[in-house]
Image 1 (spheres, rainbow, N blue to C red):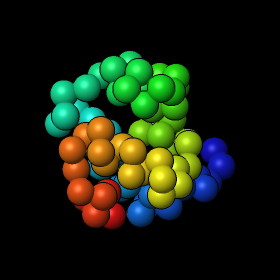
Image 2 (image 1 turned 60 degrees about the vertical axis):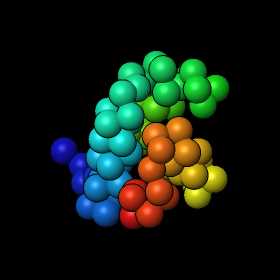
Image 3 (image 1 turned 90 degrees about the vertical axis):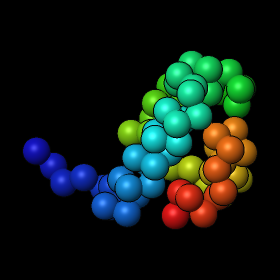
Image 4 (image 1 turned 45 degrees about the vertical axis):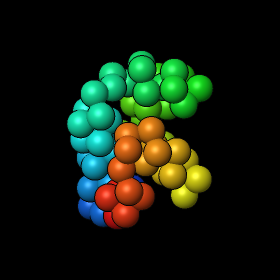
Length: 72
């Protein structure tokens, strides 16, 4: 098995992203609809397979009613 390119820090970020969605009471499908993205975008973001830029993180923070610093 090959080594993961994901850092521990990014794995922690992805876990916080998933937890924020769950705490906000959204399914992946519901969050995707609100962000006008496919469900796979949410899934891959939470799995750490989809790298997010700061603008996207800001959108997640707003949707999940979290301060952006929560994710860092």
